[in-house]
Each structure stands twice: as structure tokens, then as C-alpha cells.
Image (cartoon, rainbow, N blue to C red; front, side, top):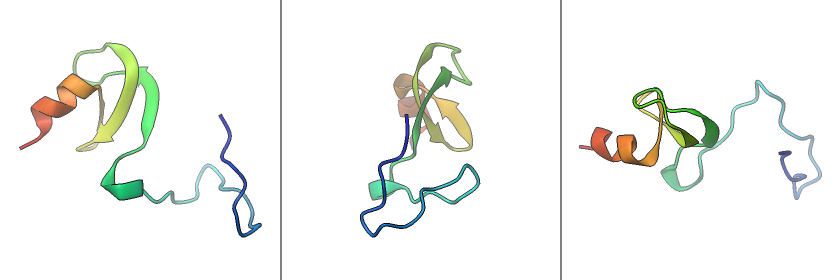
Length: 60
């Protein structure tokens, strides 16, 4: 999956460029959950990559 071109015509982001999180949500990736090891779409939360159900358990 590629990033859409910038509306201002700037260069696309490289792998080491910082990416702003939209509306406070973390980026979503596809790999194994660090806690339950299910293979699903994950969110980076508390320094871990976790699935939705594990993320709910991490929330205060």
C-alpha cells in the first residue's frame, strides 16, 4: 500500500519520516498481536502491537 500524493505537491514520506497520527489514533498494521499472537489488523498501543480485544484490555 502506498501513501497518496501530498495535496501540496511535496515529496512522499520515506520510511524514516515521522508520520502524524490522525485524531489520536495509532497506525494500523498487519502482523501477529504481541499479546495473544492472533494474526489480524493491529494497532500500536502502549509500545506494543495489539489486536482490538487486547487493546481494550490495555485501556484504563
